Image: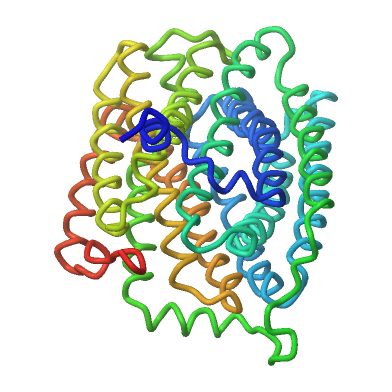
Length: 414
């Protein structure tokens, strides 16, 4: 094997970047992901500073999850009925507007949890519809054999933002406070609006058929045990094993951050995304694998073990290493969940199934926020984090034993 072949195998798989439409969407995602991660740090920190309780941070899931779920399901129907480019333009513009309102409430020093929860609900509603449309677009831009590579590139730039964003937030927070973080997010979203504007029209593939209905997606899901197992595995990982809601408390009580946030919070928030980015830079190792279901199941177990180890350490460098490993597992989860769903669902149903997937993949972390916030307040952060990680492994092994459909799945032609 030549040196060039070695680099292609062990480096990032860049083949989809040769398609101009995908490349524009892909590169602009890096900018918007950075801005979104600033808001993801600012909102829980602002809630924690107002209330002094991780339980309130966890309860923010109540404000976020309902709007996200409803908008994702509705957005899935719209993505199958309308031009997906137009839907992306509307939802990205709406996200920019809500980010500007978050900046305004912080700039005037409102300090109202109710207002924060209301704006968070609006933000997550817009995000739910936007995520469905964006994920439904990728299979229209690249051929099927490049879907794992395209999803890996997409996930890499989306995780790059949560690396750069928290580190930038950790540097800015002691100097500027939270308000500028929201403003930077609003400005970054304008870059995505420009990129989407340059995409080709993406009308429905079956415009003369009956009007899409949400029930059609549910019927399709109910008849496919593979997709049900996929969604259950994602819930196991993101609800039981996601400790992100406890980062503000852990950063201050275990790693010595000052009140108001500091470098440890930035490092913890950035470590998992950094691990995902590092895995993405080596995507040539896994994008050509064909046992997609087995890789997904192993990644869930690896995620749980890494989270469990994180909960047991009181050294920041060791915690960072654990979260880097968790992030690498998270990259595999993202890539193979998206690829499997895109490969198994016809385009005329893809929006509605992506809507259901978004409710689970984006809603699961919010349920994880709620579970870990309450568990951390009741039993302490170590028990909540380590116990959740170990329980994730046990639950995934039980699912694999009960339903072998997922771990037996191979890519078409593999």
